[in-house]
Amino acid sequence: MRVLTTSLLSILTLSVCAQGPNLEKEYEAIEDKVIEWRHDIHQNPELSNREFKTAEKIANHLKSLDIDVQTGVAHTGVVGVLKGSGTDNGKVVALRADIDALPVTERNDLPFKSIVTAEFLGEKTGVMHACGHDTHTAILMGVAEVLSNNRDKINGTVKFIFQPAEEGPPPGEEGGALLMVKEGVLKNPDVDAIFGLHINSQTPVGMIRFKIGGTMAAAQSFTINVKGKQSHGSQPWSGVDPILISAKIIDGLQTIISRESNLTNEAAVITVGKIKSGVRFNIIPESAEMIGTIRTLDYDMKDHINKRMKEMVATIAKAYGGEATCEIKDATDITYNEPDLVQKMLPTLKRVAGTENVVAQKAITGAEDFSYFQREVPGFFFFLGGMTPGNETPYPHHTPDFLIDDAGMLLGVKAMTELTLDYLNM
Image 1 (cartoon, rainbow, N blue to C red):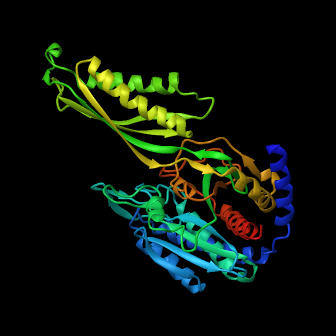
Image 2 (cartoon, one colour):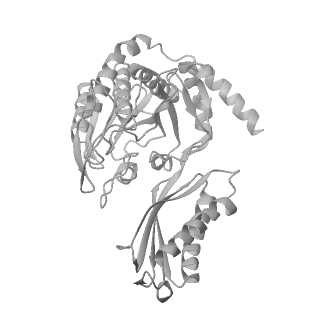
Image 3 (cartoon, rainbow, N blue to C red):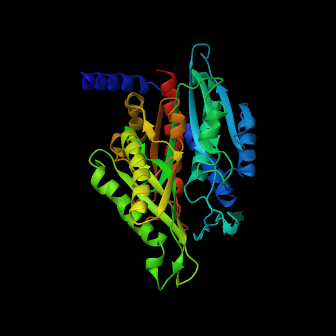
């Protein structure tokens, strides 16, 4: 019965979406602007919670469109509210773009290459939009201009959310989507649904990928502190070796994934990314520290992994004569695409991109703090192609060689605009 209902809903939705306004001339007129904005933002990247010039550029653009603007949201975020016709009883849809860059030194030879440097965790580093947030920002600026020129076609209210610190705020600071939600970004007016996209360097231009339900993983960080007993390296029997204990803990943690997690349900990952211990070749140290990440796509699996890690860390350390603690902190929640919302909006994406270019994909263990918006209201987060067709060696995100084809952005503008209009007219 559920399948039949969903199929009928999709058919009915497609007939509604097919009646949307023809904005092709608007899209053609905005493409060059979007590319120009992207190049400027790419050339002038800013780290999380430090996106001052980027925020100013966004705010000035929205104000020029006669959109109500709020700045300083979650430190450097910008929010714009655009009211269309029929707003008395109309719905509110939010559109989100992240605006921060990464501490990565760019290697690409581009006319708009970033040569910006900054200090990150006490070290000088290059700064680069190595995850495509420059394209997200430019795309949403374009959507804002198209929609502002067509207020009479908006049956409700649109909230543009330009979010800082998606890559995570600096240590000791709050930020990102979590802080925006905490400050009430989804209220006044109350948002009914939210849409977001992420450009992908390994998906061909013109394609859109999506997944219903759990799409990107919850990310957690963990810190394990091991306490042993220091001794001379030539007399290990006189001490308790925290390095040995660390090795046994790492080995044990992987059995939680390989022997206790039902990986036919969803993927899960435990990765130790750093070990710090010792000062000299002939001294068994007193302590060791390990830090790493946990990625899960299922809440029950997440709870089980967290519980077993804490149990196993303490127990293994005790078995070898030491002590150990495990502290786990949340970084992002599961990016969860609400099934009914996805089914309603898929006809829009297929109309805009072509049915053959809208492809379902498996979940990925990367993380997105868009998940915090989705925890509050129904949301749909999808992936936009940014790879030049035929490129056999695309570079992944977060690398110095990360590259996006400008030709991919116009589809993003169309998709976000049409999703907005169609949703508000349902």
